[in-house]
Image (cartoon, rainbow, N blue to C red; front, side, top):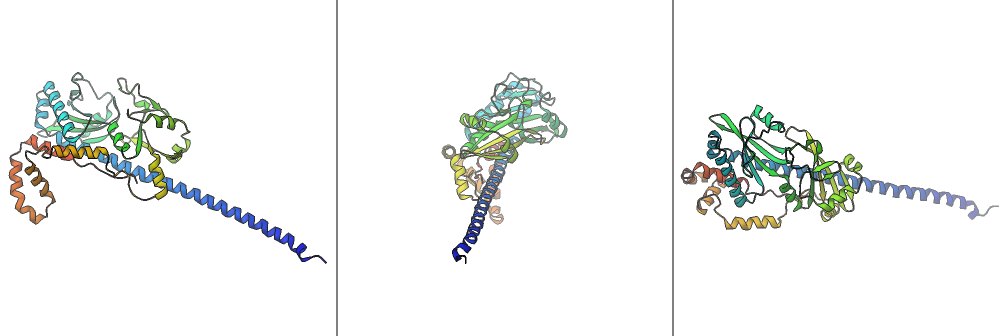
Length: 375
């Protein structure tokens, strides 16, 4: 008769094998769901980052448009256009640019007046391009001449820039166009202080005959349109295949998080891509905490510097600090309280010239810096 142990030995072996298989399956499932959870987390991080990037980009464009609309109402600029006085127009644009660079901290602000037949009338950075035709390589201007609607967008040209273009009118008749241009580098620098490196990659087919970007470097077949890109990260971005990055829109490599997003112009045409790279410490913080909060809302050294400059010029474009305090207080009051200050505010404003009022509008358009955090 068989011993009990001899009978049960195959049974124990069978159960051991089954248990081992179940354990392997459980470990496999845990690994699988962990990987899927990580993928979901990265996809969500990409979504938050892109949403905040777009919000920041839209703020930049809206801010530029408000500034441009106010500037386009300057009578002195309109008079220079009507009198066809290009030298006077150049000097006006040069003085305006210098003034607001000092008062608001805006750097590399370029202004140009364009005649009704889409030729350069005057520019603030040089005065030797007058009469140059633009419609040959600026389809957006040709379209704007048809619809006469102010616009702001990232546009191609000799450089890839933020451009706000405003029809200038006298007695409801268009007499020319004002264009306010900001280099993309300023936007890149702003994101850098918040932990995000940006490569603005333009499709090489938009390089025109007299482009200023002919000698700009390339990344994966695209022209790097911003000159202040990070050289080390360029090498890192070239070191791996972009197949996964292009398929998923994001890629993790050595503790860095790469995000790819299409770049559109004012006609919703794809003109290139944005490559965003989250710094290591920010990416790690996100992976550890995964909170729906933004990292684009911190005070930087530049914010502090701007505040110090603000303290040194408290009155700004107002005649006195008292005028400034009264007029800035007025919109914040309740309706019933405004009645008592309405006449005082109106009296103050009537003493200001039109150009002084425009200066105040322009200054206020750039006073508030939007802060957010890439979520």
